[in-house]
Length: 194
Image (cartoon, rainbow, N blue to C red; front, top):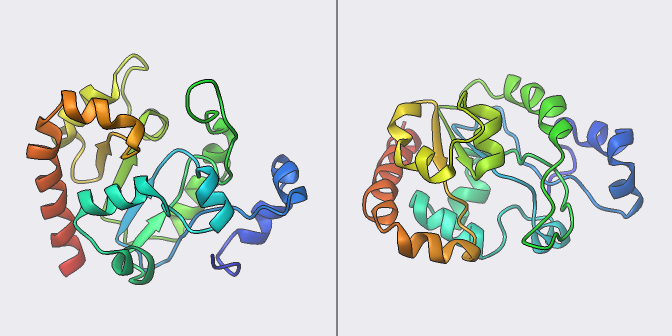
């Protein structure tokens, strides 16, 4: 985790994050003015919060496979930025994690986007990111958005969350790994080659 990243201290000092700062937690995100691809997910999981390494879990391994990139490219190239919908692990709910706080994206995302003028593609992972960034009815499902991903290109690429919790969804929707993933890999490779 780069503690000198833009906005790091501001986020830590923000009163809305006081509970996390008091725990000694750091905000989890990665922005770079040179980045070409942005990943917007929901919020860090517990393992990610503990290790302070974004997407450092099974979900991250699957996401990198879907993108067709290595861990080294993901973490060290400077080409990939990550802005979650919340910078901190929100805790457990009955089913999965607590939803990210809405005010976080509203307050911080545009400031971060403003310093990354080279972003050519934003991966919107899961419904929270998709509903925030895409002008679609609230009732629109993630499955529908992912099936119709071409409608949002070249700026956005909606994806189902790569969590192992979605293995059943992946099994029921084989078209995703047969058709969508190869398309994603092609687009990612074209961007990273430039």
